[in-house]
Length: 181
Image (tube, rainbow, N blue to C red):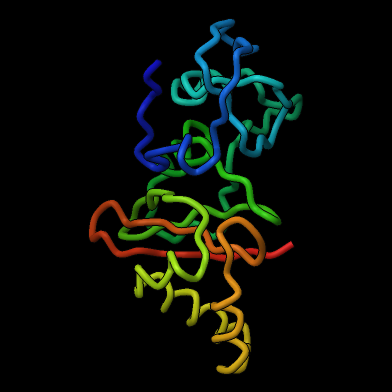
C-alpha cells in the first residue's frame, strides 16, 4: 500500500520512523501495513498510521488535556523567519524520528529541512557540508580539535553517538545534528 508523502520526511520507512504491522490504526481503524515508530509528545497511541499523521488527525486526537498540541518532534531552536505554518507542519503533520535524547529538527533557508535519516561517520563523509556543520557545533561547545575529530569518527548510524542527516529543500546543503545516550 502506498504511503502519504511528507515534504520534511521523504522516506519514514527507510529512516525507521515507520515499521511493518498487521494491526489497524487506533484512530482511523485501517490496517495500512505500516505504523509510526517515532516519538509522540502528547497522548500515546499503540498503532498510528502515517495517513493520520499527514492529515493532522493524529495531532488533533492525541492532544493532551492542557490544550498543548500533540507533536511528533519538538519545536526548539527554530530560527527567526521560519513561518509558523512550517513549524506546525514539521511538528504536527510530519513523522518524527527516534534519537538518544530529544530529537531536534533542523531548518535552513527559512524553511524546515528534509530528514534523511541517522548517519555515521561514513555517511557524513559523503556530505562534507554536514560534517563541517557538526565540526563547527562541537568547536562552539568548546571541544578541542583533536577530540572533535575523534568524536566525528565515532559517529555510528546504528549505535551512539549518532548523527542525524538533513537536506535543505531550497539550496540542497546537507545539515546534521548529533546525539548520544
